[in-house]
Image (cartoon, rainbow over all chains, first blue to last red; front, side):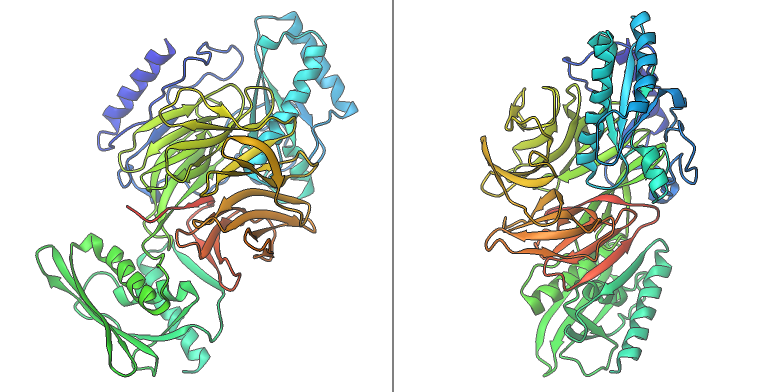
Length: 195
Length: 398
């Protein structure tokens, strides 16, 4: 079904962007679950469009390349994940610099979410790991996953089945705050419990 | 010529070229003062809609090895030329390079359409550079980079002077780690479309895409083998990040590392061995394994964080991001003599990528792109509109 919708969207976008040589294609490998995940923001049709070199409609200057993230200038506003997702403060777990250890004060947040998930086995949660923007981008992807896995382990120990938990790391790519200061760094080193 | 006048003249040239293309700024932050080969460049007459001489002067200035001078200056070499309407395609561009004794080193002409005037200026720049230095030039090369953020991400390809940026992918989710195939026809990258990471290979000139890996967990840091037949990347499907290699015709990737720590950012050396980042020793450092995996040899011991390796085309140098005193620098390790050199003053420098001639390294300082020579002598900023990160210098080729 989802594939059909994607194809439909791709066709629609082809019609819209008649001048572009090619649109993105989604050829998911079959080993992946193609099921919709309740609680996780559904893919709103096609999210990515590819263009042949020199064929993008409008050209580079017509795109917003200001690079301002949703969190820009909003340091100190927790829970405002850049790029659309809004997670309330009781679903965010913060971490120390270059660490993936769960702080004692975060235990309560994880446990209350775990209790809810264990009692609602049809809800699937996505644990989204994030880092501050210091260091290598790809290494930070790995560090963000390590943090999300640390939260997953606490949840598993409390009886949340593994098939109810998905982990994705965004590394430093989706900052919650964009300032080059310790306050922003601290807000960005986090795992968001999304469901 | 007195240095102040020379600087003024250069500024005028740069201003003229930036007026025509307003989003460009080139900031020469460090050059080889007084050491460049002096070359007098006269404006090209003939009324073409591009300032060919200005483009050539800016290109040569950016190399750090050639010092463009105003016309009629007493210089070791001189360039004169014309770009006039005519020929079968629109314009005839003709130029000569002479030495101070009047000897002619180059005398060529090109028959091009109007939209090829800039590429021809780059070609002429490279011909002059190669004649005078014996090295291959970079003026005609391109860079891929990622821009945007916050809700709209873009993968773009621009000329190396920052001009002519072209979006080849736009997405509502992050895009990371573009890597050119050795023939310059494809880019591998990480895309989070669908809110999960996938490794995708896109044909730059058709826009066609193929998902190479979408395993559960991390799909990251793609890198092409020197023959373009395989990709190395990072997967965490078996529990934690490990290095894998996949033949482009093959179905399932082969795992090359087996360690409880983070292993990521693989890049290939010409002999097929792989350099990657691992924190198996406590902090991120660079290691090397054979083509088929096996025991890892640690390569870096300086500072407290070395990551994101890049390999020079000849395989002699490994560039990396390097932390010491809390600041990230671009550094380079010479594999021949094990010499380690810090190239940038540091701050938030990241993501180095070698020029195809092996002489320069482009990198991101967290906001903008900059380039530094492998010997550290020349450094410059390339400012595109908006932020730019994750630069990948395209190989020679198309």
